[in-house]
Image (cartoon, rainbow, N blue to C red):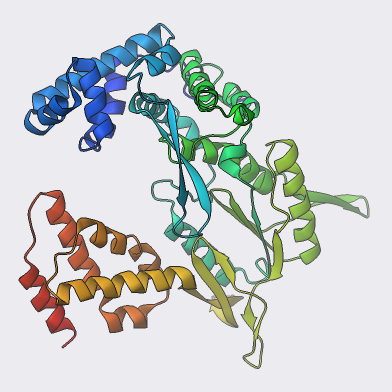
Length: 451
């Protein structure tokens, strides 16, 4: 059985410094950084903030102190004691309820104290070799280079290039995936894959133990023994790693063996599958096989992972246009995109004639309406020569990925979407450099565009 990150020395001070330095520099304007720096220098938070703003040497020296302290505690295996002792007035984890802007679901966000986050960053970077090896090609959540646009590209390709294999689709969702991951099972899998890296396993065990400590500290003992935090530096990677066992089960083991005339034949129950965080979509050319596959997926998820798939999972015929041009079946709504199959056609590839299907990808209505609202507000502010804040410019840029990766070329051309996005990018760039932008300059540009 293959193991990863063999005998990795995570207590090496240079490794620790390389992990935490970029993380801290990205957050120097945050109050918890000033608080941590104040703790390590024995000064007030106010004085610490002034030193961060005025003295680069103060920042460098303090990071050196923090790295040395973390390194020593990793060597002496006193991570839990260290996290509790540093900035003792802070809770280990503070929970805050948020409303997901895309789905509208209420989620509980976990915000750890900064020293705890630094240990998670070290664990994340140390485990990167394992994450790269274990996480599947079509797991597309919060992975660099493998986001929603990557997932959209492949789903469109599958429906278009393999109309027979994507005739039917099943969609499922794991119920409260992050808060429900059982610690014992997670640790068992980590110990299996990292069994030759004792220091790294100690750190991961300590992090999981601190999740329970945080729940006990907040008077929530019923939540002990399960769950990882939403929003922590390590959580998305741990979730993807945990769900990778389901991914590999679908692609490698989800098959039936039939015997005919003494010959065995192994038939895969699904042709394609993708996992986006805790959302699962599988395709198949046989309705009966797809239903059987979903039953096995639900069973595996419950027995092996200790998670539950919602009973509201769906199975449907993927949309297409019949010979009279009438639309049949249902569109697939996944990752904020809507995939609509249209008419089939044939294309010659030398001696082979292949059946293909036209696919149109649009943005989910609720996301498109919010994007358009932000877009028109942005233009309105420029036209009225009102200063556009960095937050407003960034909130518009957040929707650019959906729009530019969808088949909305008429909308983009008519409304000058790309040109307005470039203006928003330049504004954010100037804010990052601490330079004000000229309202008159962008007013003239927008006026010329819509003249």
